[in-house]
Amino acid sequence: MQTYIYIDGFNFYHGAVKSTEHKWLDFMALFQRVLAPRYNIQCIKYFTAHVSALPHDPQQPDRQKIYLKALRKHIPELQIILGQFRAHNKYLPLVKPTGQQAFAEVVKIEEKGSDVNLAVHMVNDAWHDRYEAAVVVSNDSDLEEALRIVKEERGKEVILLTPPKFMKKRSIRLKINCTRSMTIRNSDLAASQLPNPIPGTSLFKPSSW
Image 1 (tube, rainbow, N blue to C red):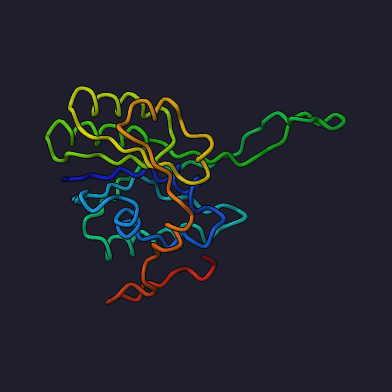
Image 2 (cartoon, helix red, strand yellow):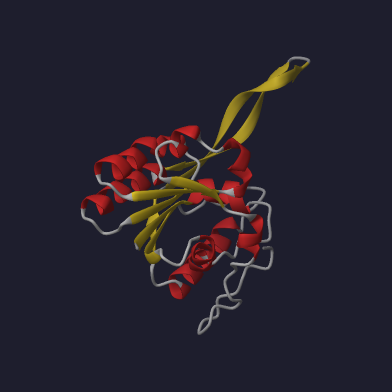
């Protein structure tokens, strides 16, 4: 079965690999492990954005560049579609104000465009009959209508793969608009790491990962 995979990068990072040792992830190995052999993976579309250096982590963009290069070199079926990354200071109210302090200045991090890009690509690819099955890796309920169109109006199989940290908070709106839903396990992430270094290159896993 011809299969396209759509990864919401920001949602996946926070729901699967943040604060873990599994960031050097081989997406092809992961999906071949999670999906049944009948799903012939033709294309993996990874929707993300170039991150900015933050005061507490100035090396973050360098690590991401290495990883994106590693993915491109090792997985020819993978496409990287970029949105925009924004980090800015913002005053937000405290849950429990102390004394006269009711607000705190925080760094607010947002990724713009990836969810819209994912929805457009998934519907457009379905319209052109590029796949029989679509696998969506996200827990963002904003994708609900795109899943519904692909499943009901284009007659495609839609599989929802939920990152492990969202297992108990899986979006009901996404679940009811897919053919079936699955959860990525931490053991699957651990067993699906890229080679280090990437063969034929000098690309190594960042030491802090």
